[in-house]
Image (cartoon, rainbow, N blue to C red; front, top):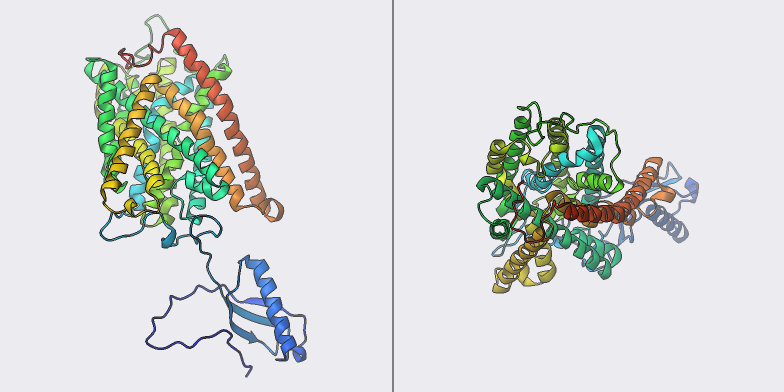
Amino acid sequence: MPRSRARHASPVRDDQPKPPPIAYPPYLPITTGLDAHQLDRGPLAESLTFASSLIVYTRLVHLPAIRAMAEYKKDAEAGVATYIQPEVEPERASGSGGEKPHAGDEDFEVFKHVEGGVDYRTVGWPRASVIFLKVIFATGVLSIPSAMVSLGAVGGAICLIGWGAINTYTATTLGKFRNSHPGCHTVADMAYHVGGAWFRELVGALYLIAYTLCAGTGILGTSIGINALSSHAACTVWWSFIATVAIALMASFPKFHQIGWLTWAGFFSIFIAVFIVVCGVTRYDRPYAAPADVTDFGYYAIPPVPASFAAGVTACVTIFVSSAGTSAFIPVISEMRRPQDFYKALYTCMGFVTACYLAFSLVVYRWCGQYVASPSLGSAGPTIEKISYGIGLLGLLVSGVIYAHVGAKYLFVRILRNSRHLQEKTPLHWMTWFGCSLGLCAISFILAEAIPVFNYLVALVGSICFAPLALMLPAVFYFYDNKTVIKSGTIGQKLEWALNVFLFFLGAFFLVSGTYAVILEIIKAYADGQIGGAFSCANNAT
C-alpha cells in the first residue's frame, strides 16, 4: 500500500476540546508531468509536488495563504496525479481596514448577541419584510398617481415596472456587499470599506439628509391628514408640530423589533386607506374635483402633448423614489437573527409593492386624470377623504417613525460604535439615543414646513439623495467586489458589469437634472400660488 505523510501535525490530548470541523474544499488533481517511476519520495520530488500544489491551488481558489499541508497522498498507479487536502485559514479582520471580515462571522457584526445588555439581534425575516414594506409603501403610493399626469398610463406603467426591477437589483447588490463585509451597519460603513474616511463622511451626510427629508414627508402627510379630518380646525403648523411630537416619541424605541408591531399596523392602515380610495373613485362617472363644464379629464395612455423637461423628469424621479429607499434596509440586516435571510424579505417586499403600485395608481389615474390629489387619498371627495385619512393616519405616522428611526440609528451607532455604551444601558447610552431621535425629528419638522408640497418634497428626496444612494453607490460596491470581471468573467458577468456602468451614469443624470427640474417646479409652484409659503397656516389638504 502507498504510504502518506502528515505534515505540521501536533499531538492532541483526549481531554482537550476539539475544534469545530473545517469545511474543506474538494480534492484538487494536480498534474506533475512526471512518470510513475519518477515519483520517488526523494527531496526533489517532494519539493516539486509541494510547489505545484501550492501554485495551482492558489490560482484556482484565490486564497491569500495556505497555513499547512494537512495530508499528502500520491497515487503510484496513475503516476501523473497527486491529491492534496489543504487546511485554510479563514480571512479575518478588525473591521478598520486591511483584511476583510469573513461573511457571517459573529465577531464582526455590529450588534452581538449579549446577556445583560440590549440585544438588538431579534428580527426574523417575516418581520423584516414588513419593516421593508412600511419603508417603501407609504409615501410612494400616495404620490405616484399625480406623477402619471405627466407621463401617461403607458409611460407611467413602464416607469413603475422598470424602477421596481432596478431598485430590487440594486438592493440585492447592497445586501450582497453588506453580508460579505458584516462589520457594515449602513451604506456609510460600506463606503468606508471602499473609499476610506472621506467617502464614509460624504455618504453618511447624504444618508442622513435623505432620511431626515423622508421623515419630513411623514410629518407633512400626517398634517394633511389631520387637516382633512378636522376641516382645517387649526393652523397647519400646529398639526405638523403635533405630528412631529408623535413621530419622535414612537421613533425613540431603541430597537427595530420594538417598533415591529407599529410597522404591521402602519402597513395595513395605509394599505386599507389606499384601497378605499381606489374603490371610492370608481363610484363617480367623473373626477370629484373636475369642474362641471369640463369633459376632458386628462387621462391619456400617451399624452398628446409631451410634458416639459422639468415636469417629465420630476414625475420620473417621483416614481423612482417610491421604491428607492432600499438603503434603509441595510441597518435592519444588522438586527436580523440571520442576516442571510435578507433576500427573502427583500423579494417579498419588492414583488408585493410593485404589483400594488401598478394596480392602485393606474386605477386612480384612470378615474381622476389630471384632477388627482397629492397625496392621492383626497381624490374621491370629502367623505371618502375623511374615511381614508382616518384609517391611514397611523400609516402616515409610522412612515415618519421608520425614517426617523433609521436616521437616528445611524447617528447613534456612529457616535457610540466600539464603546461599551453602544449596548450597555448606561446614562450616556440613553442620552445619546434620545438626543439623536428627538433632534432629527426637530430638523425634519423644519424641512417639512419649508417645502410644504408633498410630491415636490418626495421628488427632491429622490433627486438629491436616492439617485446616488440607490443607483450610483450600489454600482460602486459592485465594481469593488468584482474588479476582474470585465477582463476574465463570463459573458453574463460582463453584461452585469456593463449594466452597473449604465446605472452609475443614470444616477448621475438624475442627481443633476432631477434636482434642477424639481427646483424649477418648486419655483413655479410658488409663483402660481400653489405653495402659500414656509410655515404657513393655510390648509394643505386642499
